[in-house]
Length: 395
Image 1 (cartoon, rainbow, N blue to C red):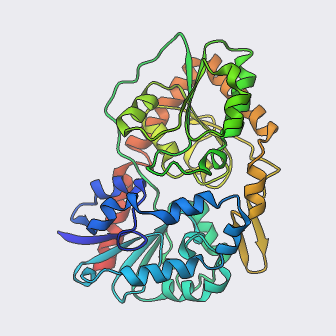
Image 2 (tube, rainbow, N blue to C red; image 1 turned 90 degrees about the horizontal axis):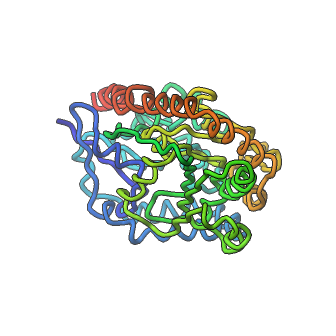
């Protein structure tokens, strides 16, 4: 049995909940090791909370210039002492400076600079990725993979880049339906951090607008919002309070699971990468309606496991510069604060199709669940890749 050290951003830095599936289901012949601080660090991860609260503040753009330095200094001050005795390091979205074998996964290239600005740190990133110690670079999606080639000179390490998709365990339950109503579900975040910016990033405002449009035509609708919701929106849609249930506090996963199980349609009209949220919905046999941005089209098969709607023309999803692409600019955050009526309209139309055709939505849900159980987002498919990668890295 070989030991793989699963390293958060640093010792004591909390691992995102998406790594739970990774830790619990390692590939054959391997086991994951984490440091004790990582297991409890959800209580002290102030950097993520600060980043969320500054998302709409121009100070955040200024801080992005220094973010990689902050991550590096924190990392070096907390680096583990015994990891050299392990077979391999699996890095959660950051560079490794030790001279031991390592692999790294990532949402997109910005993660390698602590989600700060890449320009000043590209030479360091390229040097470390090209080093003999970096064995594999594993973006979660092809969209994430493309950001590497668009922003870095990958000639010396292009053969190391391979998409390894997120995966989630199959759920053991029998889907039960309520023929008297159709329940829509929106999840801003399922993590311990009820991130302030997640509501806008995942299209919460457009969900409210779409629901208001649909309510005029379909009296049998219910909307569940697991998210922080601004007070102004609570007041604006107070006339729909009997049909909208807002869960703005952290609840146990078992409770959130019941919301997934009892829902009919999952909504993700967002402006960001999907992470595990859509996969969770698929595992609970839900069709998803998502905007066609980032890697959403790689997860949601339009017309098969859900619907894709056009992205907002008002949102600058990235800014092209002579040195590459910049994501999550101040202009981006400013734009998503205002709901796009065109996105809301398209969302309401697709929801309407699934409301009226229960056979279609249930067929889509079953197909989505199959993708999780045996398809490209299954634990089995992911571990086949990881075993080959780990074997090559530790030989």
